[in-house]
Every structure is written in structure tokens, then in C-alpha cells.
Amino acid sequence: MEKPRESNIERLRTALLEMIRELNLSLGDRLPTEKEMAERFQVSRPTLREALKLLEQEAVIDVHQGKGRFLAAGASLSIARPITKFESVSQMVASHGYKAQTRVLGFATVPAPPEIAAKLDLAEGAAALRIERLRSSGGQPLIYSIDWLPRDLIVTDGETAPDWSGSIVGLLAKLDRNPVASTANVMATLLPPEVAAMHGLEAFGPALLIEEICYAADGSRVIYALDYHRGSAFSFSFVRK
Image (cartoon, rainbow, N blue to C red; front, side):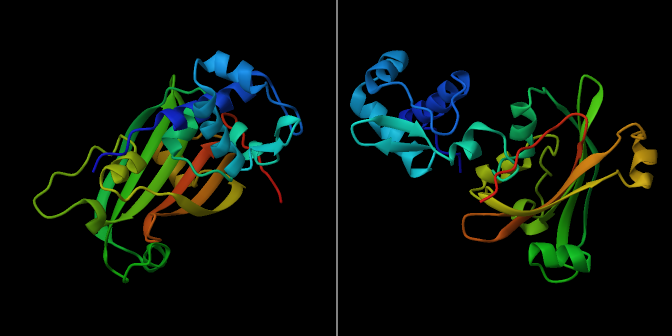
């Protein structure tokens, strides 16, 4: 199943977020008037209001009757690149301005070890896919990752395995199993010594490890990921409530 196309209202919503970024607005700042925004984006006011309504529902903006629209606390989750906002690694890498190349270091179908089976809610020993990859940009290693997926989710007998150098989230979206949320643990660490030695990553340096379980819309677990982000290449923001 193909991913639904983004609607005109959703595209306008994204454009409004870009405008907020460009204007460097912060919490409590007033947005331009409806007239100014309608002229800026060459849209009708009813269309503009629909897009603004989405941002209001997401707590990005507050509406003060008779005064205008103002940036709300929720904007921090959409304007910044917070670690609290779910997005694929491919999206995150692009958001930091990198044009990354992906090298598949290893791929195997194996019986799920007990700890992996527990993470993916599988029976112990059930078939699981293990994909090991390295993303680099301009020869600089950026992210070393290991992804585990239930084998039956993607590969069936007689089928050719997908191209794992692409986006796994994108692949799952085509199967209508795309992740929509995740739970994660974050820690500062180094690459495992054996990994650094095997793949020539001794200069990778300190890393931010994000251990993540990703869920589809029905609540099923579709990915267990270990992503080591090179500390000198990435920064993340946190929003505390």
C-alpha cells in the first residue's frame, strides 16, 4: 500500500512551520496577521485557517480572540529537532543537513535471542531480521545502527530480501506497517570496541546511543533499534513538561 499523499492543508501547515523558523519566533511571539499570511502563501483565508487549526490542535499556536495568534509551548516540539519527536533516522539525518550514504555491514535471519524476543514481543527463538548499517556523509561516519524486525513482517518464503540500504520506516510504510511512535532510552557511550575495530571506526568518538522500540498504529512492535549517533555530528533538544 502506498503512503497517502500529503494534502494541500498539510503542506501549508509545513510551510507555516518554516515561516515560524525563518522569522525566528519564540514562545509568546505574535504570528503575522491572516491577511499577511494569506498573501505570503497565495492561499484563501479559509484554507489558511484550516492549516492554522492543525497547529492550534498540536499546541503550536494559541489563539487570543481579538488579539491574534501567538506561538505556544508546543512549538518547541515542531520547530526544534527534539529527541522527543518521532522521526526516522533518514529524516533526522536530513534535518541536520547531511546527505548520507548507507552501507549495509551485515544482514541475517536468525532465531531471536531472549532479550530481542522480549523487545519485539516475539516467542523466544522466533525468526527475526538483524540489519547492521553505517551512515556516512563526505566520508565521515555519522550513525552506526543495528535494527531488529520480526521476519514475518517483511520477508516471506520465495521473496527476495529488500534493499536494506534504504529507509526501513519507508519500507514498512509501503506495507501499511509504518511506525508512528516509539519508546526510547538514551545514553552517552562509545561504540563497542569489537565494532570499532571490525569496521575501522576507532575515530568515531563519543556517541549518543538511542535504544528504541517502534510501534505501528495498532500497537504492534515493528522495530527494535540501537542507533549510535556520532557526538560531534549531532545535537538534540529536550522539552520537559
